[in-house]
Image (tube, rainbow, N blue to C red; front, side):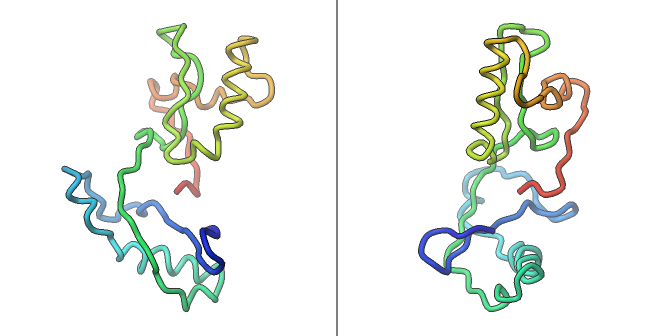
Length: 142
């Protein structure tokens, strides 16, 4: 969660936990409703465990939307494509693009200008892992 808008307002969200009924969408009509049970059964209890004051919160707005992400592990794919050497990838951030853009941009600039990562080693996010089915797992991805 984080502050959002006027004082006293917070933005929060969560990925549905493993086993949660979250079928693939078949069209945009499914975005007309919000699954409030996810908030009530997963998000609200987690907020309360962190800060008891959230026990009295009131939902003031909610939205449903498509979430674009790398389906292998929901992490970015960064680096040269192993079979198309003049193709450099920097995508699949699962909504973290704005947060990770400065570091990813710097790393790709270094890769393009020097041939290697200089400041941040992002080799673990290369496309080879997708081809080999090697996931980079993160416990707290939202």
